[in-house]
Figure 1: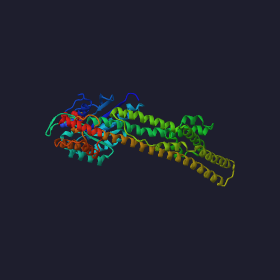
Figure 2: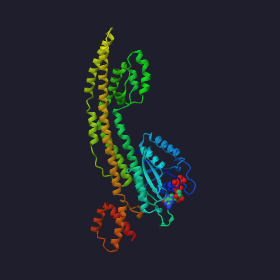
Figure 3: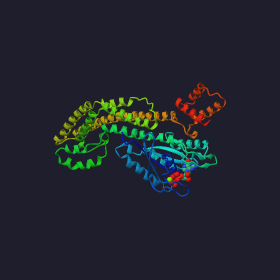
Length: 463
Ligand SMILES: Nc1nc2c(ncn2[C@@H]2O[C@H](COP(=O)(O)OP(=O)(O)OP(=O)(O)O)[C@@H](O)[C@H]2O)c(=O)[nH]1
Ligand SMILES: [Mg+2]
């Protein structure tokens, strides 16, 4: 993949520290910041940041959201995401939205919760608790549990401090940047996971080729005059939706349905499940190579093959056998139609038979379409679970390796890492830093060898 870049929008109420955070993240004093009246007045002013590992970040600042401007802000941000996501290159999409709450602020308001939920459908959202230097850990934990309750536990929450200022707790120093940069990967992954399933399913359940239908129209004046209306009405339906749900005029049924079934048959026969799975694997490889570039280590992913099995079931669906069954019903239908046409004085029995045949015919078509849809739905469900799991694996690795690189500030440590760091200090004072004991403590706290070594190195430098 070329042009590897992550595009990120930051949003949140005015004064929560959006611009300050982007300045801290990019290491440039690019955005104006300040207190009092809203500072940032434009949407999507952009700063570019190149990380040491060669990943480009496009960071878009936005105007603060307030209750009275919430709908304008929402519309602007959602529109930008939609516009970018239409591009073919995945690296042009908007991958992540950082939504900021000030840890020192008042409670989270309901208009913000609604907005975040809406954003979560469009991009992956990371919640930043800004100004963490102004509050104690208890407050951070309280806000985190409020977020979990109101927004759900799938959203990542990272607390950050973006500036160096004197506070009543002493001098604050910026922290949280590494975790935020690292979390950017998940936005990219979630986007791919979301779109890829549907793209594969659409190889079978494709849009209807209406031009082809038009070309094949029989030389029948009534049919030709009615065609534009039928097309207009069903233009947006997919093949399987059409086959399952549409009741068109009697005259059209066999003609329309057999053309649609034929398209479906072609799609299934042309569908190369093995090739699709190999392509998936290539996509995983390149995305996880990107992950490695971003994080400095490969994610430890155990691939499953359940979705492949589901795809092979779709491929093995014997559509020809189904179509042959339907064809013989079509013959019966034709002869029932002829019967009605030929009967000059009928007592209604012929019509009854015709209706019955028609019902059978439609029923069989719908059943076939339902079976194929069910196979596809199963595939999508299994595939989404798999992709979600891979994302979770990456997240787990991130947490495990959170400080696989050098540590710059104790404020960056997680809860258990802080415990380890404090125990190390205490043991050091008592001259009891025996490696075996330390290894046991690290393991008990779920801290990897690399990370514990980094903490020890950092603590040793301090002492
Ligand atoms: N103590 C502390 N102050 C911060 C932090 N981040 C930002 N601030 C201060 O908060 C004030 C507002 O910061 P901005 O970055 O301008 O906030 P904003 O969200 O961009 O605000 P608008 O542009 O008005 O929407 C500034 O005075 C910053 O110095 C932080 O982490 N800790
Ligand atoms: Mg601003």
